[in-house]
Image (cartoon, rainbow, N blue to C red):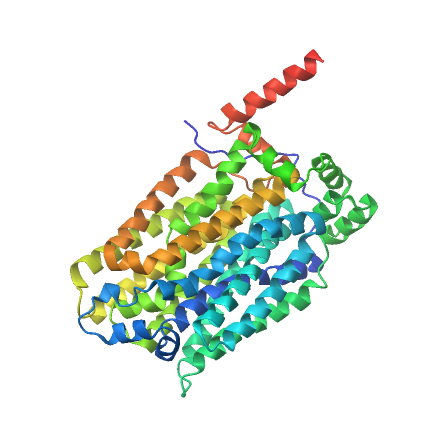
Length: 509
């Protein structure tokens, strides 16, 4: 039985070329991912710094020095995890409002608002003198992440040529990786600042990517899809389309965009529409993809890698440096994904990455089960093997669920439900990012080495899910994406039935 398919359509819109205008626009928009990545990397680094712990989380600092406390439970603190996860709560609430802004006013205003909110949160975090101020700053950062994660993936997928949509859309995850690497390098450097205020520099440096995004977004063009959806002059959309495609022959693509936006809906209508049976595949993927992305456990590695390495007995500086290594490797693997996703396809990369992640997590769990007890650390040899396995895991994620967890949801929705569909994707992502981030240190304390088998089991489940239920979407224009569901072995039972009923009604009329 064929469990997936690749659409080899000869009608795929192939006019146009890669223009400097599109590349610069997409590079600037992808800076929204840099904010998210920087925050993930910086939060894990500062929470492993002794001066930061001593000032804001003194109980954890004292607990860390207590020889009687288990290695697995040293950093078990709900207040400490609240510092990390409060951002995701704010992002979750924000994304629903961001959906309205993105649809009613365009992708560009959402990106600008996201950058500005991140700037405000950075100022509060860098100047914090108590936990309340610190967490309030994190909430503002969450507002920025909510807007950016809502608008940027849509912007990239709508600006890209169909045949290059995978590579360009993966720029979002690539910028997340760059942000994480930038953050870990900053943490490694500021940790060496004498006087115990290096953590302030780490938090305040987020102003650099936030400023670039906020100012740069002011000069971004709006997407043709958004211009047409909001009822703007079709001639204006055509001129923009000609500019970003680098050719005058865009009438076919323009007609497709106009047809896709012909049924205007508000957000309430869009939400009702996406719940209809004919959009069941898209709704399932909007929920499943971000859920599975977080259940890989990647944000555990991103947010808590330095703490995890310290749990294994590495020193503070060595832990931060190890986080730098894994960040660089993750970025390199995302580069590889960018250049192969439109050749190998989405499904192949999901399979390759899934197998890598399963193998590495099982090996890490086995080593920690047999060689990391409640007290003492791992030998240098085993610590090195664990570091290698973490790197292998990060490579697998960078090839698959990292970029593709954002790419697939951003390209499967028809225009009438695209904004609300992306909003659902971001909301589910943030719900489970918050859940995993808030519970990980407690789970590590109670599950111990079993935490890696827990996430490894979920990777098995998601790999099987992709194999059976996710069709191939490479090279297909957004406006023709319904074809993949109508020809898929499972989903055609649902969407074809609806299409047949609609066709029969039209004949009877």
